[in-house]
Amino acid sequence: MNYFNDIIKLLNEASDLSISYFINPEKRIYFLYLLSSIILAYYIYRGKKDTVPFWKYIFKKKVWISKSAFVDYLLFLFNSFIKIIFIGPYIFLGLYLAFYINEYLLQNFGFIEEPLSKLQTMVLYTLSLTIFNDLFSYLIHYLMHRLPFLWEFHKIHHSATSLNPLTQYRIHPIELIINNFRSILVFGLITGIFDYMSSNQINKLIFLGVNIFSFLFCVFGANLRHSHVKLSYPKILEYLFISPYQHQIHHSIRKEHHNKNLGSKLAVWDWLFGTLILSGSKKSLRFGVTDTKQKYTSFIYNLIAPFKHIFRK
Ligand SMILES: [Zn+2]
Ligand SMILES: [Zn+2]
Image (tube, rainbow, N blue to C red; front, side):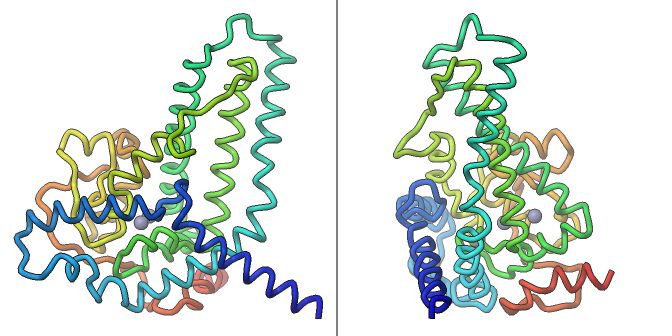
């Protein structure tokens, strides 16, 4: 009986967590970001001079009620369980790490004589968090494409044959755990260093309670990265920031697009390491994986396939 109650409680927590994403400004699918994405999509739609009405263009059946989309939705819900069980209890590790780094610096270098001012801390800390998180995202994403056993897990994100904003959450639980430990690590490292450099005056540049740079990223169409809306940026900007269409290229099945545009917010890492492709003239793209004959069409298959393939190898 107790077991049963625990399961019901867990189900409730997981569904609450999934729903909360739409009203949490820290999440990419926060309703205001979805709204700004619709406005940007309208701008692209007008340029297309399409004959279908705007709402039909946005809510294409092929995109929202495809088999692939249902796998996205189920993984989005399922990953809420993973977050509650395997990630939530470890968030505090970031604070521990920050505390020990600050202590280590204090013991080895003593109190800092000229700590950063409040404003300096706010700007530099927010920038460093954003840049280092982005760099580590790039590096891990790079490894996921290059190391065969990590690729088996990352393939689940790439097995989507149509893209919608929830495809962002179509990741294997193992990748979800890796990504979360990456952010905990970067948070701990950067926070510890800045806690020391500012003499414990740490503060972040925020808007609606969110890192201002993440806010801007989300407002300027982050949701269109996983969509059929081909929004690109002016050429010069695409060397600095990954546009939605550049991420769609990342999902393309064309050989010349494989392992390209691995960046999250910034394109500079791709530029630096030779993996950048600019939007150029926009063609229609097909999405999915090509290195396997297996069909990643069911939710269960997406969950177990990586283990099966690694084990077989
Ligand atoms: Zn990828
Ligand atoms: Zn993606």
